[in-house]
Every structure is written in structure tokens, then in C-alpha cells.
Length: 78
Length: 336
Image 1 (cartoon, rainbow over the protein chains, first blue to last red):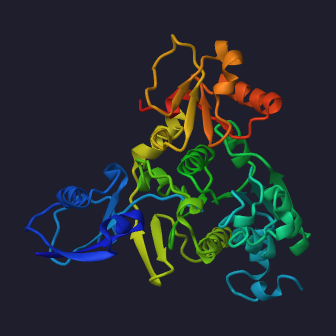
Image 2 (image 1 turned 45 degrees about the horizontal axis):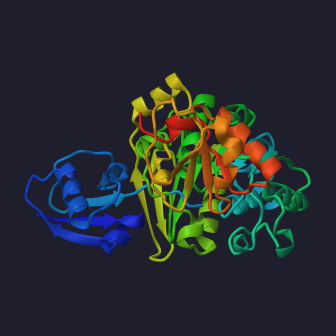
Image 3 (image 1 turned 90 degrees about the vertical axis):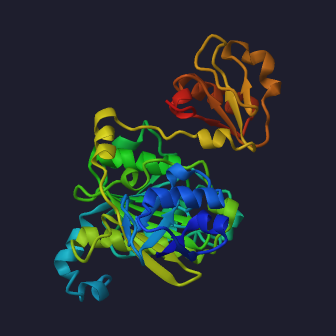
């Protein structure tokens, strides 16, 4: 199934892209997806990274076809 | 009449203008975010504004910190801002705090204001604002910038989520605008949106961005809003234990910074890292020459008291300009 991933802040720089469409196994969870992307791109400080599924943060769910998953890092500039 | 154009609006009117006049807002950090926020709130007639910043104006601030002119370089940001803002609106009462927000002064200060604006550029102060707002039951308007991106939200508003609900764990990548670069308009845009949230809170109108995180990318021209869920345990732990200083372990790994451990050799726990210099306070007199005079040096002890005294002394009597005391001592540097 295909899911749409969006990267923000320094994660977009680490991955070299703002978004991508991934073909993943049916039933993949947000936790598994996060682990996979952290490993693939060597994303720093994984514990601080928050995921939003279809614009809802802090949800640990089983992903569905067409879901949009955002990877959000904290940043503090001002 | 000064406020005519906003009083004409149904959402403001004479009663709204009265609400603005009777409100108070503390702006922590008078930089790229704080300058535009302050201008619009003073212009709009918020009755009392607090301006807090320990920093001085530098030339590289001017492209985004729009209250300052070339002639202000070297002067106190908060003091200059007050002078400029008072010219814009003499009816507004403006208080100036030329000091940093700390664990010691945060709660007392916040109690004197209705709403807090976060115009800061580092995680430690953002978590400090968050915790002090929970303890004093004040809403705060958050914004952060990374290059062309901004995050905006209102925390601790009518039992809404807090910053710790959004980011329970901080990161080791504390990158400021100085380090990454930023267009002046990015904090400008976010600062104005912070002022907008303040106006909505005071006027009790529109949809306050509580429980929402707005993400703006000025380069791609896109905006998204995410829903933040409350994590009650994150709020409860602050109510129970008070302000929890955020670990600056990230900085321990930042090799451009040096840490100076002034605890005696028997004091535990030890911190081992090649950028930690160990000079016990009892022997400091003979070793002052070992303390670098360039690059930031963060001085710490067990609680932050002895190191504060030492920093004050080294600044006053030995002319050090690069020392910073680690508030809260050793426990803010290491885990646990």
C-alpha cells in the first residue's frame, strides 16, 4: 500500500526531500514506519521526532492506504 | 481617534478596546519574533507590556529585529525597544527587564501578566516558559523558526495541551537563527501571528490555536495545521515537582563549547567528556589562567550557586566576558 510522507525542519534536509510516496507492507504501524525511516536516513535524535498521521499528532496506529504521515522535529530558532 | 479602525470591527468595538486596555502581555525575547509582536500589540493598545531581554543589539540583528536602528548597536534591546514603542503609543505602560528568564525569576514575573509571548531562540527557555506558565496558570504563545519554516501554537490555554505534550523529549540539535541563517520576514511573519493569537485571546474571538500546531513554510508557500493531543502526565509532573530544568546535554556534545566543572574532587557524579575542564573551586586561584577567554564557557557546580558566585567574580575582577552559569547545576547537564 502507498503512503504519503512529509518531512519538516532538519529532517527534510537529512532526507533531502520535503515529501515522498512509500510503498509499504499492509498493516505497518506508525512505530515501525518511524523506525524504518530513522534507519534509512540516519535521522538524528529519533526520540524527539514526533509523527502526525493525517494531521493528528501522537497517534500510534496501523497505517492505511493513502495515509499522510508527517515527521516533525522540534526546533527553537527565533 | 487612535483606535478607530479596529473599534469599527464587530470583533473589537468599544468593549473590545477596553479589554485590550485592561490586559497585560509579557514578551520574553525582543528579537526577530518579539519586535513585530510588540509593535502591533503596543499599536493596538494593550494596556501593559513587559519587554524582557538580557541581550544587546548587534549589527547582524537589524535585518529582522525591526525596532532597532544602526545607532542602537551595543545598547540593551529591551531598553531601546521601550523607547521606540513608547513613541508609537504613549498610552501603553511598558516595563523593561534587562535580564534573562531563569528558574528563579520566571514564576514571580509571569504572575504579573495575563499572557506570555515566547520570542526566544533556545529549548531551555521554551521549556522554562512552559513550566512556569503551567505553575502560574497563564497561556503562552509559542513560535519557533528553522530556516524558512515556522511553528506556531498557543499552550496552556483553558486546560489545553502544553509544549511538553507536543515535544516531551527535547533534541540535541539546538540550532539558532544565527547558526542556520534566516530571512528577516520569517520571524517577522511568525511574530505577527503570535500578536494575532494574543489579540484573539484578549478579545475572546475567533479560533485560538490551542491544541493545534501551525506549520508554515514561507519558501514553498504552504501552511498546515496539526492537532496536538494532551499528555496529562506531562502537565501533572510539572504541577507536582515544579519547573524541571531541561538538560543541556546537547551542549555537552557541542565541541565549540567548554564546560567548567568547579566541584571538589569528591563530588558525584563525575562528568566525563573532553570538553569538560575540571578545576575545583578550592584551587581556582592558581588555575584561572587555564580558563579559556574565547568561546562560550559554561560553568557549573552541584546546584548552580557556587558557580554563579564564581562567574560574577571572574567577570568583575578578571574581565571574563565568555562565561555563563549553568542554572540548576549538574542535574541539568546529565540524565537522571
